[in-house]
Image 1 (spheres, helix red, strand yellow):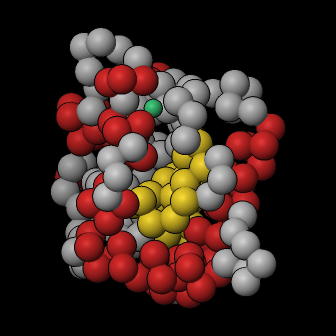
Image 2 (image 1 turned 90 degrees about the vertical axis):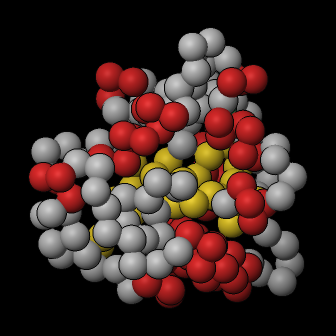
Length: 173
Ligand SMILES: [Zn+2]
């Protein structure tokens, strides 16, 4: 595999980048967070300052993104509280994915800036990607071809329930 976090950007690069640049009003992630229908927008969990959503063009089944509600491009500008919550939600994502999909490993990472591979460079998002031995051997050669053994709406249902099950009775993250 050539670049750890590059394969999932292909579709977003062509579909999500707007001529207007990185303004929040052209941001596909802001639009998903504000859509009102979380199932439609693939938002599986909402925290206080950050949310978890499915990647619409998953690299593997269960590919999650954790992102702040605020449209901020970098770790340093999104604020300490949001940074903390993003990492807490990533930990919940790890637990939810392990409970539902039993992956052999996970990639957790952020691409900051288009040069680093960020498809949507204006809105910080942390990828949490379950991995299995050999899952990238074919994909890395073919590029955009991905093997998706499950429909997104099924993934949504599984991970929405898994996140709900992780919340303490006293309240959420
Ligand atoms: Zn945004």
